[in-house]
Image: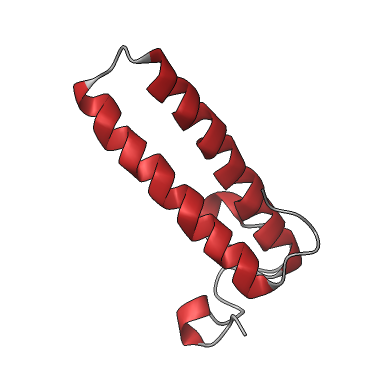
Length: 88
């Protein structure tokens, strides 16, 4: 679970883990659309992913367009991406 005490690398790792879980269960649900346990699993980890993405965006920079704050400055491209050295 994401928390305020995670550093940038830890939070990014958590986002990667829950994103993998969400993608994996989506593939399962394509062939098992009525599996209630899988749906609950998806709902739980998708919510965790959204929380982690929002926390990352508030502390560092947005990773997804859904977390961009389009106020007076377009911050989507301002900071370096994690693969560009933005995550230390």
